[in-house]
Length: 157
Image (cartoon, rainbow, N blue to C red):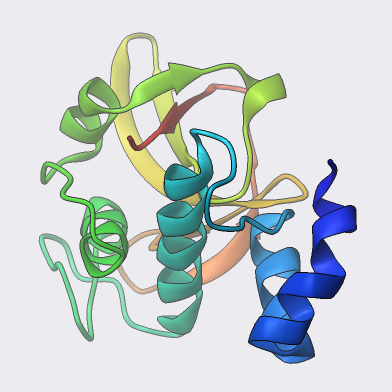
């Protein structure tokens, strides 16, 4: 059964706006009793929504929210609010996540920017080649196109 086949009954229970929000953010709708990745998809979609809700929050090195963030502080905060604990730094988060291919990525996965083996930045994949992230000093949390091919992907379990 595809996600599209499940939409009508889900919309009846949750309302059209909720279903459309989930579909736009997560790309699929997860129902109780679904596939084993269902809970992972649910909290990943929630973490993505939380990160998006922080749009415009100022970057501050070392900040973990709720009003200011650095890159890994935003991912840590978003996943913690969604019910999953992550380590503090981008590299620690990479080491803790389940590494996946670019072809397997989905909204809510982590995107790790690297130079060689050094992970220096992280964001949350929003779909369409874009991430929510806290870029750098003087900037704010925002949605941005992935600007390099030097990225790895990770899924929080």
